[in-house]
Image (tube, rainbow, N blue to C red; front, side, top):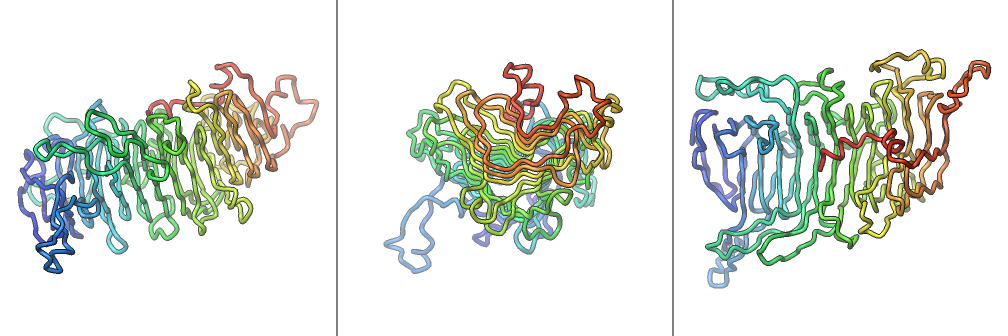
Length: 556
């Protein structure tokens, strides 16, 4: 691996350990240190030789308190644990790591920390992280992860084209494929841009006592940064609330909801407002074959509750959005494609900053703007009573698939939570790919298989809300629901209720049903009419008729 320059915060430096991108791991070892990769410098190589990671930093060591030392208070100096802000990486250059695979155990990581900090880019310099299969950056045990640059995870092994800025200055240090390994042209595997896990049970070396270090927290911030990820499952930002486990004495076993935080802010993005793109064609400006691939699944932001704690304060987390919200038919804040979900949250609180008017999401077939479970809350009563925020959902999938503004589900089939209530305070506007002639006649003339085209919407079902919870759960909607800037006359719904209790307190506005002369309407056509709220059959086959669960299954 070529380390052109790694400059430590303490003004020491590490450089020139190797001049080849495909050598065995080159024995640079550090811990509890803050390292900066300067602008214009590159760290790159084949991870098959690098223990599966580009850069990694543990943080179990102690140090003398620097304030005491600066004051020359040597006698009273404190020997203390290194803070999470004092260990990790600041990347102002380029980190490009390849050699991962879609196989189990084959994923790799660009930059990894435990109880540390990763800052990719800053307000003046856009740091870049490139990975083929796996994770752009990962942090656990009270790590702070910030992206102001670019993170690209391609899902394809292609060292030469992964990052075109790596200069091939000689045979030894150029980015090149290993002998006998095929270049991949289609994305595969499970790939993630930013991963934050509240705890991975980090412990000190046994010689130092073997105690836990860090805390059960995670903080992720993507502020005007770009995240592009492709894969069979592609996730832009992933946060997980996990309980501590293992034999070592536990310090803060549970991560509280307030300690698992994701911030997405694209208000001042200078490059692109759709700063999170999944299965778009990562790193190459988009590819149609990836965008139309029905075998791929993607999530812009995911917040997952692992242990299903019965105490509501100890499950889920908070997603805060300061999104541009350009609106229906405009550039999305989160861009997904087939089987795409803008935001997925389990026991999540989705909040909006004062400056944000809401969220715009594009998806392809069988997609959802927002999918939440259990006792999640979207926006707030205060927002509703003030200036309501809006979810603008753009369906851009095949004309024989489905799309949903919001989905409410459950991860508690055994009723450990004792029944939950989810609430939505957002207005919902959905757009059916800009189509304005989705009449009964259009639906009858449609042929199979389905196709994707500009201004061609789906005739198989589009809805503002889908409710698919447990029978003891409640969903309460306080927002208005309407179709906006498209006209769908068949199978358009304000809400589809498959299972669970649904209360609607908002207005629902849809286009006219069928838009056909009565003489041309047959008995079976009455099943295609638009409806404000439709209660579906409660058997399993009928529920799954309106719901593709594959994305959530593989997310686990």
